[in-house]
Image (tube, rainbow over all chains, first blue to last red; front, side, top):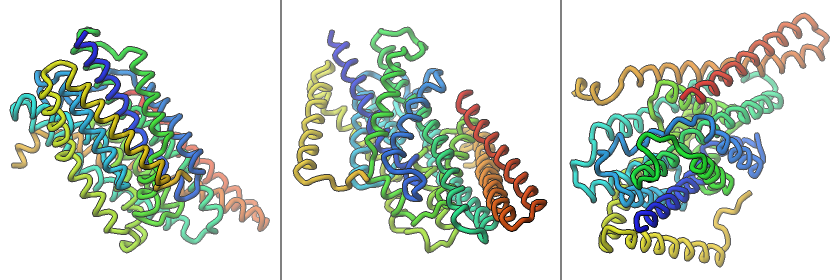
Length: 365
Length: 82
């Protein structure tokens, strides 16, 4: 019974993480389309939400749980997963508040690493896995996307720079609808699978599923629905940063950025090299701006984004470790996670009430 | 140091990812830009009563568009085979 309570809390928390993942990362998919007016804002998020939902069903292989590569399997308990998820959710909400695009995957990894470290010590953390699967890709992803986005915009201007702007803009806007759709599908596939993996891991650990089981249908449907719901709600603060604050984008730049992003993400998927969607798209946007001229990029905003990237792992790890510490004050049972969940819900309710009193800081367009 | 990194990081996958990303990203932008060029010039030249040149640019636009559609299809296949 006690284990079932923890399981229910972990599943609920994983779905909340999935919702924050969706609304935090909506910007990756729709920001360029909205800022170049390829699509109306509400239509863009609806389109992205629908494709996120569909993307979650495209690949139904068991999601390789990222925790397996970064912490030792013996350190994984439902409470560690719970604390890791709280770390990731908290960091997603903090970066959303400041309008900063950061990697939800890195937040989840950081949260789980921090919780595992607090639970089982340094031996539980797989340094090689963190370096190879997280840190190196975190450096490579934005650089590759920056270069591809930069070269792509130069190609666009070389080919079409002397054409009439009207048809060219219409053409690139159409292209953005397609490349944005690919990004949404890829995002749904990649990120919803992480939540499916976390829930499946918890079900296996609790004895509800046999080892190496596929995610049950209800897990797939609920993860797909959660990420789609989050995407539909739209993280407008980050959309604004990505779409207008890094560079002032024309349709060719929007197409170059989203096309470069889609190409990099799909190539990395094909070769099994994990890259962060957020970092890829941000790099592509900066590249598309710098390809036009270096001064077109607001480097101060870009610097804030890079700072958020650097802080994501340690900050989420710190919150994950602290959360694990708090849960252990109440013993090893379900009381600790239940109390942390209650505190989290109370804080969310307070923030929501405060926002209602003040009005939306960044109204949905 | 490099040897240690090579054992931790799959450098082959990394290199392939970088090359494929560059080829796909720049390549798709190139062919889609050609599709827009073809369509734009086709309309312009048709209006100027220059049918031969218009047909040539129209053909360029269609071929480039088909190539772009093929690239998107490959992208979806890559996702489904993960």
